[in-house]
Image (cartoon, rainbow, N blue to C red; front, side, top):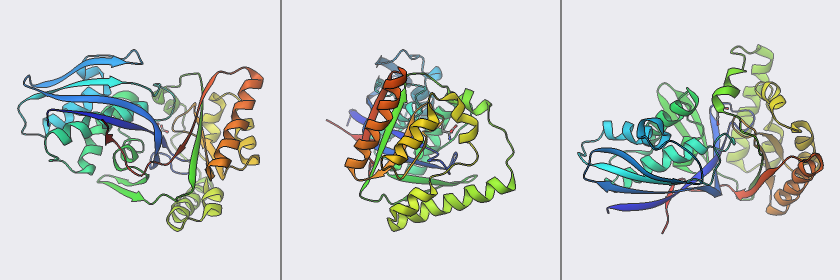
Length: 307
Ligand code: HSE
C-alpha cells in the first residue's frame, strides 16, 4: 500500500473527574487525512484545508508526531500528508490529537504495522506537547484505541481501554470562542486539597466501575469535577446555565470538554442526547452566542481507514 485515507475522531478528554487520564472518542465528528509514502525522507505536509495551520513539519502537530515515529523506524523513505480539518483548533474536542494520531496511525499502516497502539500513543503525544507544552495522552489514547480509555500511569505509559455502554450518547456544544489548552492550563493551581482529592478519586473509580457494569445512574453520579471545573468554567460563556439545563433535560452528567470551551453531556439514549442538545442551544440562542453542536455515539474504534 502506498497511500491511505483515514478518519481521525474528535475526543472528549477529562470527562469531569479524570483530568489528564480519562477520554473518549466520538463516532461521527473528526478530521480526514491522506498519507502517502514518498521516496524523499522526512515528512512533507502538502495540503491543509479547513484551517490555517503551519505546513512546516516541525511546527505542525501531525508533522512532529510523524517525525517521532520516523525516528524509531528503520524505513528510509518519507511521507506526504494532507490534512482536512473539520475540528476547530482550540475547541476542546481534541483537534491536535486528531491530527497527531491520524498521521502516526496512517504511517504505521503503510509500513506494515511495526508499532503497537501504545507506541503510536507515545509518538502522538509529541504532537500534544507541541500544541499545549504538555505531552498529555487523554485525547490521543481514545483517538488511537477508540471508546473510553484510562491513562493509569504516564511513567511508564499504561493505557487501559474501558468498555463503552451501548446506549451512551455524547452531546457537545462549542461556543465559538477559542481557548488554547496551554492558556487554560496556566490558570490551574498545582496543588489540591485532600478533601477535594478524596471526592475526585471516589468519582473516578465510580465512573470507571459504572462504565464496566453499564450502570448509567452510577456514571451520572460520578460525572463531577471538584478540582478543575471551578477554575476553568469562568472562561466559558453561560457554563452553569448550560450544565444545569442539560441535567434538567435528562443528561446523566455534564462538564467541560477537555480544556474547553466546548461543554459535553453524556446521556442514555439518543432521544435524551437530542433533548439536551436543544436545551443547550436554547441558552446560547437567547444570549446571542454562536455555536456548533454535535450529537454522537461513542466510537468503538479509533482512527480508521476510509475510502
Ligand atoms: N487534559 C487536558 C487538559 C486535555 O484538560 O488540559 C486538553 O484537551
